[in-house]
Length: 136
Image 1 (tube, rainbow, N blue to C red):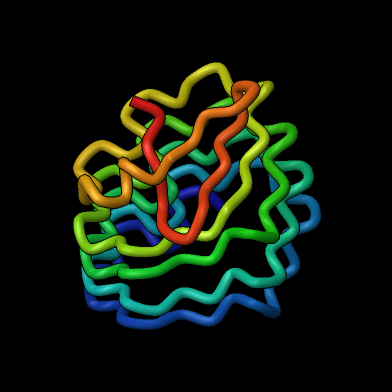
Image 2: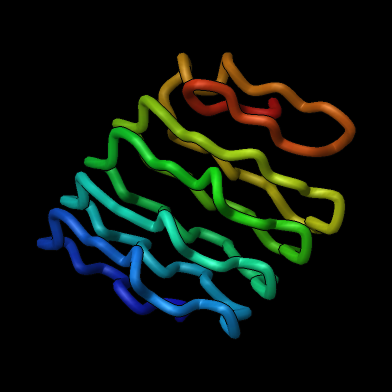
């Protein structure tokens, strides 16, 4: 599913709650460049087998909130730039296990400072509270 919606800059909302993602391994750049995207429903995404999430939401500059609380990141190796340049992001719900992540550089690069302040890094896992977080 990598690059599936890449640079769909006119896309404003997307409901993928009925997508079957059980066998998906690669989600890198999936929504990268979706600069007009304001609503995204990934509530039923099964990410148990995913290893690649690099730049998944890169440049989603209109996205204000994102609920990834159902994401299982136990097998993810690459998260670099995952939320980079999400300049409008105010709320991110997630609880990421990053024990196997080899690259999480620039994960929140260009995100609002108030989001970065709320990040907690505990036991090498990324625990996001009401809004997002940065591990810098």
